[in-house]
Amino acid sequence: MRGQAPAELRNAGEAKWARWAKREDKAIRARLHQGDLDSVVNLLLFGTSFTSQPRVLVESITEASKSGVLRARVDDLVAALRSPGDNERVLFLLQLMQGQGVDPTTPGGAGEAGKFLYDNLLRVLQERKVLAERAAEASAPARPNDPTALLDRSSFFRDRGLSLDTSILPDFEIETALRDLQKRGLLRAGQVARVAVIGPGLDFIDKNEESAFDYHPQQTSQPFALYDSLVRLKLAKDNAVSVSVLDISARVIDHLRRARDGAVKKNGYVLQLPRDVARPWPPELLAYWKSFGDGIGAEVTPMRPPEIFPGLETRAVEIRPDVVLSCEPVDLDIVLEHLDLLAGERFDLMVATNLFVYYSAFEQALALENVGAMLRPGGLLLTNDRLPEVAGGSMHLAGVTVVAYETGGVSVRQPVGWYQKRALRP
Image (cartoon, rainbow, N blue to C red; front, side, top):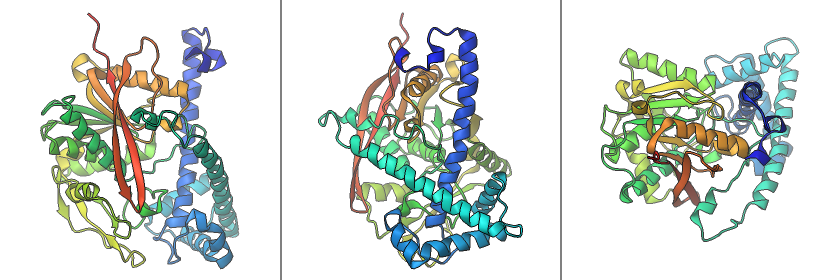
């Protein structure tokens, strides 16, 4: 990776590496703020907790602007910021704005808040044009008959904010990959006990309309979904799984800590699982949605969605307190850090979806080796991005599961690569 390393690291000693790593960690964490601003655009366009206006799709934003719908949504969001009540998403946006020197609650602050929202929207729209150009350049795999070529998204979002968006689809794709690994004999019954999820996300409001909802509290699903899948497939024993959640987001860490505090008091963690029936799912995805959480909780009455969603089917699952307590959040920058684990403490399995695409090739290579430092020999990392393997490194791409399905009339071929920790040399 010498040709891709920053110039200051070529022939660098330990002191230079330490200084670079400190600056790099600060720069990576700073990108969380831009990701939060990206999520604000999703809230403005798709949110229903602060307005009765119809949602605005990006492709129809010009029409929404001409009709006044976009302006009405901005006005309604500014009004909500001036009187947020207990709307946690609006309260977060208010805090975010005030940190930028914009306070909608002050005299004259409403106009500044509206301008802030418009400027932020224009920035994201311009970024989307750049990303669309990158996508067009990378649309055709260089090796169309090679399934691993589907992993080649490279560093698609390398200069974009680190977003916390998440949905149930990556959870389904991971379970499908686990089934495939089980059939191939790479994972056996009862084999998995220690797992880690890197960057699970927090459902503020997704960037895709079909899974963008803000009528229910913020939630995270992947740590619980992974536990659930392992138990369902009998790859792990119930009550014998520990899940480390590795993240740099204070919001994710705090959210899980509060969930654990509730679990100490015997309170479960409720996940709301809405599904838009106007966008039909294939039988295997629908079956996954219907069974989600069966192994680690119980179905409860879901929250009632707003009337704007007449075709929304909902279900909710309350995750058992002991499962919530098994998920421990850890502040860790996977590019630059790893946990110093004893041999018996290392992970059997690690998962990271829609994460590494936000980093450069050099950062990805560092992250892969940090993963390797935390896995037992033969342990696996499941991810939907290709990561550069370095000569003499601890990890290699052992294979890929291609998850093919159709949702909302769109055909999806989503790869899940399996990176494996090399066995120790004698």
